[in-house]
Image (cartoon, rainbow, N blue to C red; front, side, top):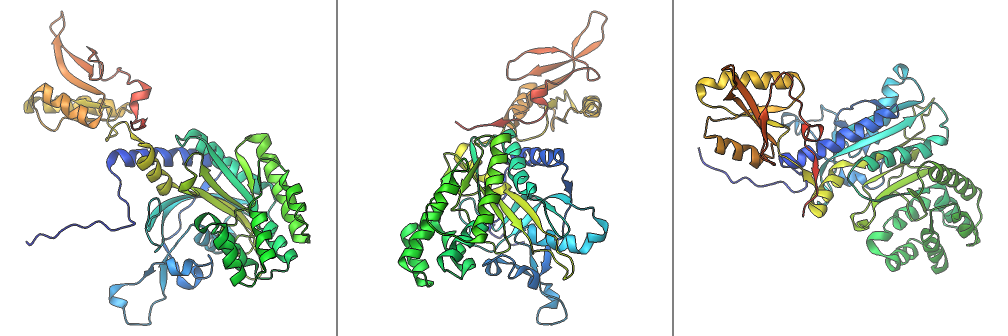
Length: 450
């Protein structure tokens, strides 16, 4: 058979075992926090009709991967399908499809792969994992849910080795009302331009706004609004000082103030009112969120979301919702590449059961079986090498303990097992039915690189 060169696909990351164990630690922690707050798990299909995906997220139609069967190419017999680019659009469809079986307000979490056909770059992939929470209700959605979303994320991030973080919060009604008060009617277009502020800088934003029909003064006012950032409700006074008035602006200011006040009482210093945050997806209508890691702001947002009032509707009933999503693959990749985070070992096994010779392998297997029954992850040595080689095998994988069956003879003549901590060199008598693995060693931990 002719050999073929294996070429990696850009934007489709694959982790090494220790890195994957790190990612699983993140996913387990996130899931635990979501469930502590009463969010129920669901999973939606990977594909949606393209017509549902297109137009649901601003410019995302150019990022959608189309899906078709090879045998169906060139025919018109099958609906055009696309891989979902986020989890909110399929969740909205899920709510409509299963509304009669759900209890409202419906709290769900969803951890799945998503796909976007954008240009890959560091921390941005074509295939990646997101972890979402959302709350949807019938007809109306209580505003207190908008304050709850970032606080759940704050709890999850506090349990993870991400360091200091800030959740930036805005309300889409603030820029919408401000732009309308300025006389700018293309609110969505203006939002999309301002949302690029971090990427292209203020001078280019002004140029783009003028090209879109704004005056120099209007463009500068848009920039002034985007420059307001406070950790309390003083943003209201700063907005009022710009001299723009509109009822929608008033609504947005009051809603954002409520979120910030709740954040200050529950998780002081975590939430920041940042009027630059707009979010490019068109379906957001109220509070919006972005999350940055302090000291690594150049990474961009690692967790974002917002409120949407019209994304899920069957023409008779509307299901408004609010949600927030952690870019798990993005966050983990950046922590691995920039902070050297990894798992303390490349295998879940805490114990390697040594094999004296192949004739005694059944005894080693029986010991491993007892340890596993007691919840201690272990593996049996693959070869009956010299014990020094078996210890090196464990050391290369980060396995902290090596178990030796019948390592010594007792005074009564019975063979006694021993377990060795290969880090300290301490070797003690042990019984598989009673030996306790130290909790810190039972599962892989997290290590920060040098």
